[in-house]
Length: 112
Length: 111
Image (cartoon, rainbow over all chains, first blue to last red; front, side):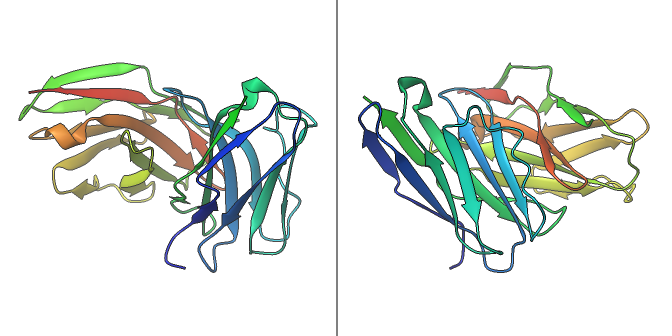
C-alpha cells in the first residue's frame, strides 16, 4: 500500500480481555515502531523493530504487552488482560533506517 | 543516551504572525537527522521538515524553516504567516539509528 495501515481504527473491549492490534508498514521499510499516546500527551515509545535484529522492547510497560514482526512485514501488538489504564491511541510508524518515519492513523483502544 | 527537549508545553500566536518553537537535543554523534512533525486534532502525524546534520544550510519548506545550531545542539522551528490550520501539537525528533522524541509543544493560533 501507499502508506502505513493500522487496524482496527477503533476497538472497545472489556476489562480482562486480550486485544490484538495490527500494523502494515510501507513496503521496504526496515524499521517499525509502536507508540502509545494518551489524550493531549506525547508519544510513549513501546517497541522498535529493525530488520532481523533483536527488537528494542525497553518501552513495553508490563509483561501483558508483547509485539511481533516477521521480517519486514506486518506487526501485531498484543495486550493481554486489558486494564482501563491501557485505554489510549496506539500508533505505528515505519521508516528506512535513520530517516523520517511515516505514521498510520492509529488505533483508539477503549477498555470498559 | 540521546535526549530531545521541548521546553515550551504550549505557545500561542496571532494569525499571520511568526512563531518559533524550541528544541534542544543531546548526542555524542556527529551524523544524524532532525525532524519536526505536526499532529493536528485528527491525530495523524505529519512530517513538516527535516534536517541532515552534515548540512550547514537550514532546511526550509514554504512557511516553515528551521534554525539548526549544531554546536549548541539546537533545532528550532519558525512558522511564518501563521494560519489557523497550523494549530496542532508539534514534535521535535532526533534520529541516528532509532527515533527519539520530544514531549511536544501545543501551538494555538488566535484569529
